[in-house]
Image 1 (tube, one colour):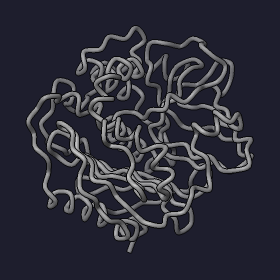
Image 2 (tube, helix red, strand yellow; image 1 turned 135 degrees about the vertical axis):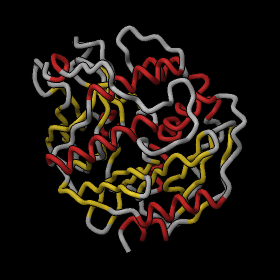
Image 3 (cartoon, one colour; image 1 turned 180 degrees about the vertical axis):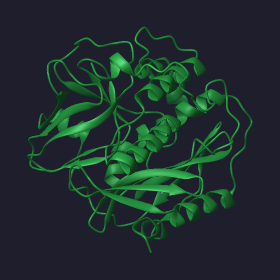
Image 4 (tube, one colour; image 1 turned 30 degrees about the vertical axis):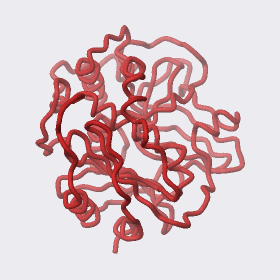
Amino acid sequence: MTIIADNLASLSIADPVVRDNLAAWPLVRPGSPAPDYLVLDEALAAGVARVTEVSESGHVPELAFENGGSKPVLLLDGEELVGARQNRVLNLTLLVAAGGKLVIPVSCVEEGRWAWRSRHFESSRRSMYARGRARKTVQVSRSLRVANARHSDQAAVWEDVRAKAEALAVRSETHAMADAYESARSRLQTLTRGFGPRPDQVGAVFAVNGRVAGLELFDCAGTWEKLGPRLTESYAMDALEHEGSDSGVPGPRPVADFLIRVQQAPVERFDALALGEDIRLGGAGLVGGGLQLGERLVQLSVFEDPDTDTRGRGRGGARVVSLARRRAARMER
């Protein structure tokens, strides 16, 4: 069995939590260990880690990370960092050793700003909305295969953020993803009420608008307790595009079929920039990525492939096609 199949086989699926057009099936594994790492929020709050621009002039697709603590720090794919010259999201999950320094690959989610707001980045305590992470996963996987790099298509990410803002009727002077989240704050709180972590929960399968959308999984229940709420919110941001729709909830069979496809999907491995291996998953209409450390699956996200998924979509849910490519000046500032 692959490490993914082995992990999924060890899980129990609890009854779904449903609110309007958002549903989640908790994934439970009794007896998971306590995390032996800090999540980024904890490390930044404790002052043992910092994230900065790579230089005074900065470089859009890269940031500098330093872990001055005594434990590894987990940086989560899609996690948003705010401040400095412009807001960014992580391109993939990293586990940085104690004392480690690293240039981390990121994507900009604030197209209209390139000006200092602070010298260090802060955690926004949120992740990029799920369908945006799915599209970025496709781009980063392609970059790994073709060039052994970890780049997104920055112009496509900007178009995607604009489409999300348009779908939610949000205006932002700097086209910041953060403004879409802040505008939707009260609606997100209402929609995600009751999705809190269960005992021994290490992940969840999510459905949006009546269809299975993705899976999120960690090695420890303690990590899900810290990061699960923001991942739930990332699916809720997509559900808001179909707010009020009477889409129903998928039955057990679509969820089981999705998990079987995840178990059977081909997996590629690449040396990680920090600890462990980057794993990338594709095929069977799925895209995904995560981090493996030895025989341990630290983190995994898997989505329906946004290029082949034919689900019904709201105003901003159609596949983003970058018609107005903005590569030049912004990409190499």
